[in-house]
Every structure is written in structure tokens, then in C-alpha cells.
Length: 607
Image (cartoon, rainbow, N blue to C red; front, side, top):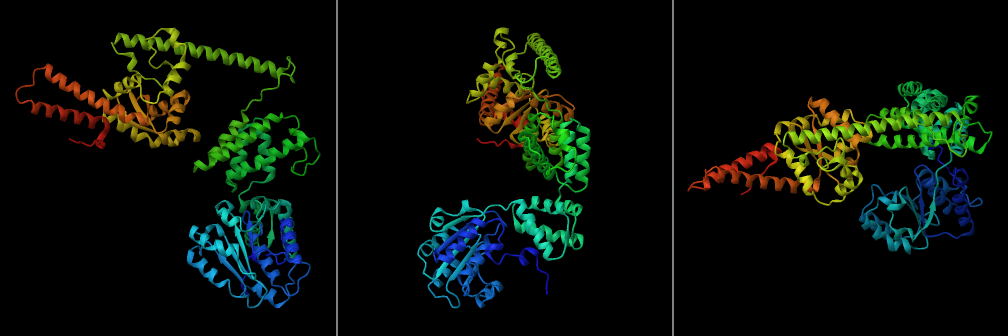
């Protein structure tokens, strides 16, 4: 006989053998015993929690000729036929592949016929949310008032996709995820019946990976039996599932709590090389940190969640805030995993960040003479002194730039230094009292719905000196920035686009107004972007930001004003003669050529 997968071989045949859904199975048994059978049922819940199994057992019990306290006997002719899938009165339909109106109309036409073998005709429609809206509408009337001998059982993993008109016509049963203890208990029972040796720790790993699904647990167990030659071993379970050994997770957690970044990184790298995934390592760290926090906070003595004998002793003096910060950082790293193909980077960033986190003690709980408080106060004073010195340097540099602009007879209002200090935009030539109010200026720039006159001047300064060569140089290195920016900073490259560049500045348009505000206020991020562009292009460019919705307006106005300026110069030079159309055409050609130099071949010429 061909091999049969464990989840098929050990599919429950009675309500009592269904794991983790006692409330639902008891309700269904009582309905059968009392004869209060509804015409339609809706089983909803995660995959592998027993929806289809309960539907089959319920259909078999409805047609069983020898019921045993609401349970099918599994011995009569109808039960045996139902177990083999050969009973004509029990029809299973996969809505994923039979989701059209025609299939539902066929059901609607056949429900009027009486059952041929049992008492009820039972239609089990699996993954019912896959039906089309037309198919749902075709089912509505029949589902609401079917013949007395017909029962519908609908099963779905995505209840939110089922129309409310369908839900209101059924009795809904919500299947819950099966607990890890119940999963382990069921796997032990099956392995005992199969006479297979197993390691309890291996079953715990499988139950954790299954995430509440019995079918997933048995599928992993089946795979492990094939891998390990009819035995279930802990090391093999770790290798198959991609989980890290629990004792290794304890060591990583201790290294984090002890602020030993090198040790934490080394241990994590070893587990990654052994087959563990970054996601599983983060999940295990969150689980263990949560258990440690609960144990210390509740003051319990249950140490079953930890393997090392002295683990609790080593962590008992750690402030609880460290656990809160660690769990929050790990969740952030898990979220970052969705946006990168280099899965180890968010994990490594998390390990370094969590080992460097400082806990600010509660002033009410910590004496003023505490060494921790004194050290942090000293560090705070030192940091404040550094900030003050940096502010002084910024002011001095600002004054130097203003003086330099006056010396070279350059309008300082045309210079835009978002990458150094956005608060100084357009303020270099104004009194120091106004410069001392950067917040008001920021608010004014961000709240303006259109590019104001100041912003136009800043962009014009770039466009008047823009070259196609500089723009192409920045576009060539744009993909290279992806490999050097942090995960959280790469999103900026998706919303920024270099559109014009001069030998010393580059205009970048920002797709969304919200990101324009965020980028404009994040000096550190713009500093990093400026440095990396300089590193790859071997040339320094200052960044000018402009919202996407304003860029085309500013560009159009610049081209128009540039054209007018050329015409004015033509008149002043006395070139214009009786054949005025020819010089105008020549100047128009010059405008077109200037536009192409600025914006590349994307310029379309229209009369």
C-alpha cells in the first residue's frame, strides 16, 4: 500500500479525537443528540485547526445509522462509505477551483433531490471565500431556505472575505489556534502508536513552528521522520525548522543583557551558519525575554522555560526596562526583515543596538548618591558641552559663508543648504535675532503648499549652472547608494529623484509631501546621503529638495524666464533687424538646447 502522510492517516474520525476545539465539538454533538440541526454552518479559523475534519465528522454523524452519544459509530455501512469518500450523499467541493456561477447553479438544481443512502445530503464547501460574487449571489436563496434534507457546511480561513449576507444565513463557529501543549500531546500519542522514539525538546520545537496548526505540526513531523530515519531528534528538528537551540538563545540573551556585542554577534553568526533563520532567532529572543520578564515581575519559581540552571540567577538583577527595550527593538527588526533580502542585517543591527541601550533610572527609586546616577550625570554634562561646541561651530560657519557670498557678489538667498542646517535657509543675510528662530522658519517652509519665492530662487541658482554631465554622474551612482545606506534609510531613495545638477549642487524632487517634510527636518540623514554621493562621485554636491508637485511649475517658470532673458539680450545687442523671425528662431533653438542640457532627452518640443 502507498505511503500515507501522517496528517491524513491520523485525521480525526470522531469529535472526541479533535484536538483543541472542545467547545465546538461539544456543541455539534449536542445538536445531533437533540435533533436541532441547522440548515447551514460556517466554520472559520486558521489553517490546520480542524475545520474540514469537523465538517466530515459532522456529515458522517448526520447519516450514521448507529449513533453513539452524538458520535458516529464508524462501523455502519454509511460511516465506512463516508470514511472512504464513497458516500454519494456527502459532497465535498473545493471553492478554489469551482468558484464560478455555473458550479453553484448545478448545486442549486440538485438539492431538490432526496438523499439516496443516508438521511441528509451534506454539501461541504471548502475555502468558500474563493467563490466569486456571482456565485455567492446564486447561493443566497438556496442557502437561506434549502430543502429539509440538505445541510450546507462552509469552511474558510479568511472570514473577512465572506459576504455578510452569507454569514447571516449560517451558524458560525470560530476555530482557534491549537495550544502548544495540545500539539505536543497529540504528536506524542501518534508517535507512541507508531512505535517511534522521540525527544521531547524536538516536539516542542515542532509545536512552536506549527503556530497552532495541527496539520503543519504533523507535516513537519513527517518530514523529520524521513530525514532522521524513523526517530525524532532535537538537533534534526532544529536543522529542519531553521530554529536555534534554546541554550544558544539563552547565551545570546545573556550577552545582550551584559552589553557584550561581540559575543552576541558571534553566537548569532554561528547559529545562522548552522541553518537558523534571522526571523526565528528574533522570535525566540522575544519569547525568552518575555518569559524572563514575567518570571521576574511575578516573582514565580517556574523555571521550566529555561535550560541553564543558573540562568534566572544571572538575570534577576537586570532592570525590567532593559527587557521592554529589547522586545521593542526585536519587533522593529522583525518588521525590517520584510523590506530586505539581506536577512542577517536587521538581526545584527538589533544585536548592536540592544547591547548599547542605556536605562534611565527612576529618580524616585534611585538615591541621589547612586554611582549610576553620578556617572550618567557626568556623561550628560559632557554631551551637553559637545552639543554647545557644535552649535558654536555652525554659527561660525554660517557667518563665514555669508561673508564669502558678499565678497563674491553672490546673492546668498539663492544658496540652499538643507544637508547642513535647514533652519538657516534664506537667513544668512538677515540679523542674528532671526537666525536664532529656526523652528518658525521650518514650519513656514513645510506648511507652504506651493514653492514660494525663496525656494524658486534656490532652485534657479542650480538650474542656471546645471549641466547634463553632473546630473548623469549622480544618476549613475544612485543604485550604489542602496548597498551602503541602512535599512531604515533606503526608503528615502525610493521617494527622491535627482532632476538637475550644477557643479556644486543637485536638485532632488520628493514624491510625497510627508516625506519632503521628514527629509527636510532630518539633517543627519541628508548629511549621510551627501557624504555617500561625494564618496562615489569623487565630487561634493549640496542637496536642494523640492516637492514633486512644485517641481514642474518651477521648471516651467525657469525656462520661460530664461527665454525672455535671451530675447532681451538680443534686443540690447542690436542683432534684431528687419528679418526678426530668424533671430527669434535661433534664440528659441538656444532655449531648447539649454533645456536639453538641463533635463536630458526627456524634453519634448512643441510649437
